[in-house]
Length: 309
Picture (tube, rainbow, N blue to C red):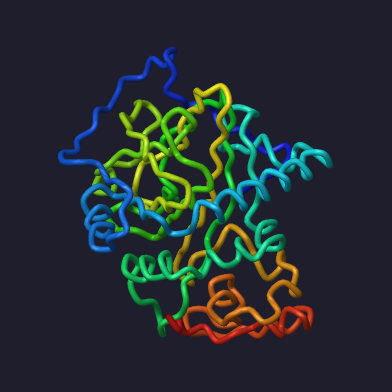
């Protein structure tokens, strides 16, 4: 996630002035709805490519974290607005973002959700066992706030073009809803069934999509195979905050180098699992490369790579 004067993505929204042809949905059956039933979640992921897990955390906690995030964004913006806006994935300057590296350092909630049993179990089910049962890693992490008037993000996959779609999912993705996600405030738009599409993503068409509406406290679940994008916030007074986490295999390079961006003091007494998924292991795909020159405070956090969960 770039910050500051980052290269801006070409605007690719689906506004009324967009003259590209529309690619209609090719999906039959009901759309996923919020549910606590794990079997239904698995079925929705298989059938539609995404699922909505309901009541994963309380609405009170969602509001608390929503307020905390808003205050932190205001604090960063007062110092330098470039820290929280003008990311290359945004079509305008209205949205606000905060890096997961900052979140990990600033509140236990943003560390706790990383090792929550829901994403960890789903990640293991989808991505399967790794070499010597090594832990998955947090690939990307950040908070996104859509503000009234913000444009729709281009429909895309969270996937490198170098990896063929036929290879299957290489990332699991989770959006923790701090607000109610509704179409009016920019609920994430999904292209159900696109996880089975073997055609590469194209910018020459408009993908017909549907809003994944979910109440605060829910978690949206999908993989890097699914076409999706942040919706346009057409409201006059509603914001929509979500915390996005991606997990990848241990041989994949994460977007954030957490051992170099995390305050060692906040991880004192943390679980082996949290440190594993944040990359605090000197072993990768069975080979050990000692962290000889890492500060002692970082070396003290190193854990074995084998998953405990």
